[in-house]
Length: 412
Image 1 (cartoon, rainbow, N blue to C red):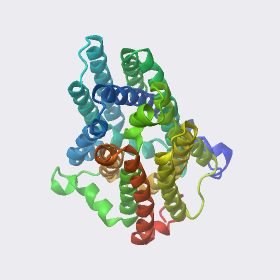
Image 2 (spheres, rainbow, N blue to C red; image 1 turned 45 degrees about the horizontal axis):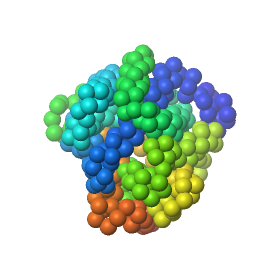
Image 3 (tube, rainbow, N blue to C red; image 1 turned 90 degrees about the vertical axis):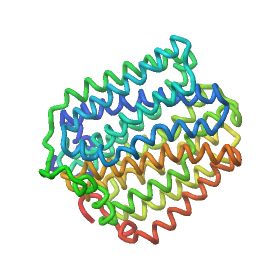
Image 4 (cartoon, rainbow, N blue to C red; image 1 turned 45 degrees about the vertical axis):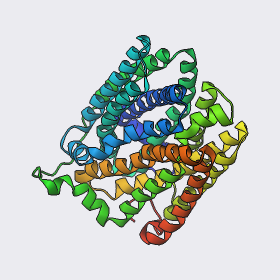
């Protein structure tokens, strides 16, 4: 554990901690199941309505709970056992998958029922995400945090690669099979995380008043490194996200079926996983801020290329490279946020962070779907890619402290 952080031995050191190893596995199964549900729901909604606006609503319905409950979810994460919060939320997610399965088996599936299930799913994620992110620093020593974040990201990305492909194949066999497998995986993940030994969690006794509730927002606003990192993710992915429109690309532009949709959904994850594993062995040692901004700009560029592509191979390659660039920026942002945030307010800060991440992902999907309904699928993606490049340039000027951030081994 005292070896240099860049050595091959220390790259996997986080997994030597039993609690983190179980967390890693639980995160994998949860993400894998989520990807299966995401592919099945996306294909099913578009099959029912053929309206890209409804694909945007899929993201909005899941994001709304994170926004509405942000003042509650972070406080809960800081006051209660984060491990059990994650387990309970995974059980709720399993219940949502069970509800979708029952509706399919009863031949009573419709868009309204799907959106209700997704809303409950969104509530579970609203509580689970800040607790899950805040749990990582409690499971490993500070010197292994960067490695733990890279390994955690690799768990997520491996599932993002395999999950959509599995989701497409399973949906091809039948939506009931897709939802049934997701149900089992969510339940399995809940059992694994419940077996994690309760880690130390620093809490500061605070009265349950308005000041304690908004402490996360206050901390983010005053720490410009954290504010810049969180807001960069918000606007970059809000504009550049194209995931919501992949069913439309798969059906109408690239002319591939559910399996092809799974391949498109997996491509960003594959690129990101390769980079995450590389970063676990070769962490960024210098010029972290500049590298992050460059990768955000590359994410926008590859999104633009995907938007204009009509060839499957080029579309998959562009999405893979976009995922690789995004992984670098995510790795740097998340490490900086965790290093600069005290554990006593980490849950509330991560709740704010998750709202921004949710806004960039789910609200970004709504942005993509609504713009596509107005001007077309391809222009919506192209404009978003250009916007992401512009955001990278603006944030470099507006947040010089973030641009000058160099090392990820401690506060810069």
